[in-house]
Amino acid sequence: MTEWLTYGSMFASSFLSATLLPGSSEAMLVGLLLAGKASTVNLVLIAAIGNTLGGLTNILIGRLLPLKEQGRWHTTAMAWLHRLGPAALIFSWLPVIGDLLCVIAGWLRFAWLPMVFFLAVGKTLRYIALAAATLQGMEWWH
Image 1 (cartoon, rainbow, N blue to C red):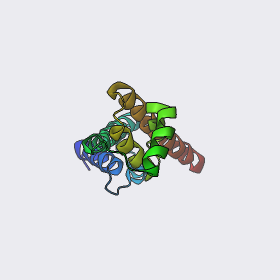
Image 2: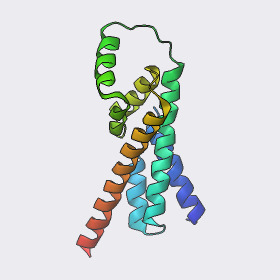
Image 3: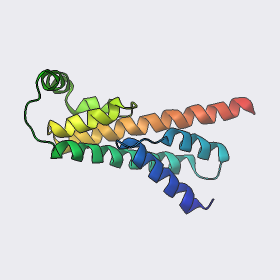
């Protein structure tokens, strides 16, 4: 696999995994790290950028939703997310819940800069932890 294809595949997988579409960027990252065909730092960076951009796609979807009250669900979401604010997006890496957090944050019209910051931090820390665990596991086996 060429370096361009390696990084392109990592980006595509991480982007799609962060949208409402199913994906498994974690498996892609681990596989590419185990294959040793690309820089760990570059793979983590590209995965984080792709995943953050995918999360921003969900935020944009939320922004497109009408702002009418939706009953009890609306009240619960408003109370919880307003208490945490954009910092809730630090958990955007969680499966299923993370996608929903991004959509709701967009729907609640949080400010862009804090949303992007916490989204990027959460996504990046997840990939750093995964890469570190993978590389530590590789050392353990050798």
